[in-house]
Image (tube, rainbow, N blue to C red):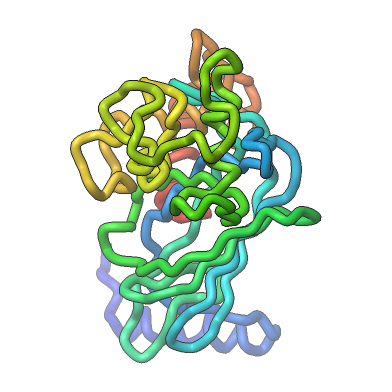
Amino acid sequence: MKQMSSGFYSTISYFILCLLLSNNISISFADGIPEPGIILYGSVLDNSGKQLTDGVLKFVYTSYSNGKKITKTTHLKTIEGKATQYSFLTILPVESKIYGSSASSTALEISSSYTRTIYLENSSIQMSDVINVQKEDIASIQKLTICSSYDSDNDSIPDAWENQIVNANLWDMIVSIEAVNPQDDFDHDGYSNFLEYQYQTDATNGNDYPINDLKISRTKLGDVIQILQLLTNISNGNNTVLPEIDANSDHKINIKDINYLLGIVAKSK
């Protein structure tokens, strides 16, 4: 077969471009290089320490450099984890910067700083912090406990978080937040209440604790297994698949569903 010259392909490409433009078909280019996103999951607590599973949770990231706002919305629901239940799970899009450009309006940019505000609509639950998005955050799994930051006893742990410990055992001597000592280890897992708050683990569950890494948000094999369980609803012998990732609508886990799931994570959709 006769090989086509490069000039032939250039002519065809030019013809296609003219055809698109003449029909008012817009051509869009990525503002940044899409990277595997950040998986966020965790619990939302009311002021009494009760976990909430209904409502709309919003994440607002405001760039330090240009003031650009990126908003992510997710709905609360009951999510069964390996050791406990959670309120939400979402994926944040991430992009690497292309020289002379910036990340798209819906993605966080690597090597950038943001003020993050998280709030539950129609409630007083809100928290704010400052985050620096680094290369290590690509494809990371991060756990958050979201509650009001009000701290009436000034011990650096919010009242709502301490109320989890107050309510965990009605027969102990801990009947108020003032009785929750940050240096105590309520669930006897070797980590103080304050460390469990700092690392966003459950201070009332001895099976949920920081493991071998000060940067607890970094992905480990156990985290990957647990997050796949959360995403696919595989736990306690349940092999059904959540509707949002059931690629062929057969209500079972198969290779198409796994590929689709990996595609969601890889493309940060």
